[in-house]
Image 1 (tube, rainbow over the protein chains, first blue to last red):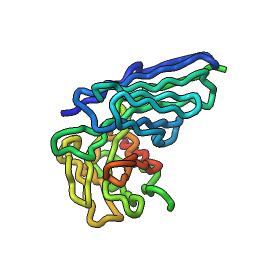
Image 2: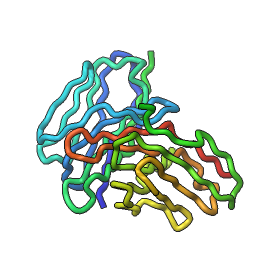
Image 3: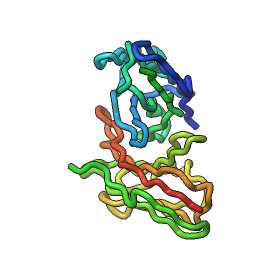
Length: 114
Length: 115
């Protein structure tokens, strides 16, 4: 079945440093979504990418979808303590009968030291 | 809209007991997901429904787990009998399940502890 791998598992940065997490799917995706989960909270939707090679920005966050629609990345510029949390990618399989099934990566836990 | 509502928020039970987790999705959403989250295994999809019909239950760990969606506004996840290794946070999520904006909205989760 579809697998979504995410690296790194953990990332510790000093406030002001940049941060990047990478996501790779074993199958071609119809779209990819990114979520953030604060400690003790639940995953909250950040953004969805649909087109091959798509790049979207939200303030200090930059999201990319690969040309083959099998990988994605999230880059945070100049991290702040409010960026702390776990960042998940989640992919929807482009083929088969599993349309609608949302498979999450393992997540990257980001800690930011002030 | 109150969002996805899960109950209970916390559940502590003894091994061997039956546990039922409940979920009310956002009105109008036609896809519902049950996820389990642990430190070791991350966020695992257990089962998902589309229009109240189970589409994929390949993530359900074993026969002790069962899920139902009798109508568009209610779903349950049952574990019987429960075991200590079932201890985790269980999330329910719902989405519109159509092309376009298909993001999942998560409930607050149920933290299950089996002792």
